Image (cartoon, rainbow, N blue to C red; front, side, top):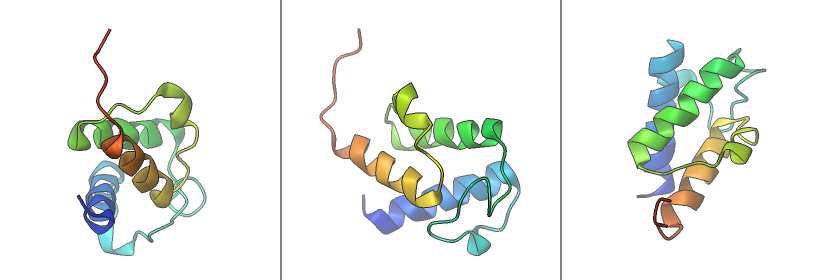
Amino acid sequence: MSTDEIRATVKQSIANIANLDAGEIGDDASFKEELQLDSLTILEIAVDAEYKFQVKIPDDELSNILTVGDTVRIVQRYLSAPATAAA
């Protein structure tokens, strides 16, 4: 999956969850400052990304998701990581 496809999917997810226009969400928009999202909404976006891309984002990575670009980079990292067996 290309970076542009991931970014478009993430933006659409943000738009649906936060009731925003996907076309008005910048590629590196800050969730808190620019989009005025609270921590619970940001967590919901991360969980939705895990579901849509079938990846598991470790809890300690969640605090690193501050922008649209961060979300795209983390999804890319875990999409390209080899799958590990669940314990």
